[in-house]
Length: 152
Image 1 (cartoon, rainbow, N blue to C red):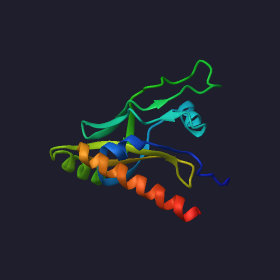
Image 2 (spheres, helix red, strand yellow):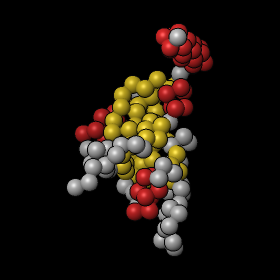
Image 3 (cartoon, one colour):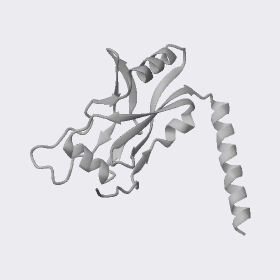
Image 4 (spheres, helix red, strand yellow):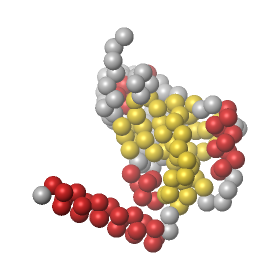
């Protein structure tokens, strides 16, 4: 069996900036063959994506996976609705927590695990206020300054 290299990780940096992440889950995604090949070429984006419930299942909408270059006439659509694969217990936990006011379900990271399967890390987040965003920017600047000083 071939060893898979875990090089592909597509991040949603905006989610960490705009939301305070309370809880994280790792979910599988129901993908087509050409979508898998495109993700392995790092031709995907989760910046504008969001997750929602529909009849006891979780779906991701707005996730962009570019068409596979060698797909031919059997290619997928770029912004297709995709189902997330989680355990029933995890789905019920997420559903209970989403009933609280101000909690959202966000895609955080798209990656390939050790077995070569494409996974999506999703998180329950609560929106940050403007002063919280400023505070996180200050923390990032301090970390950069400390890193510069330590390099010298």
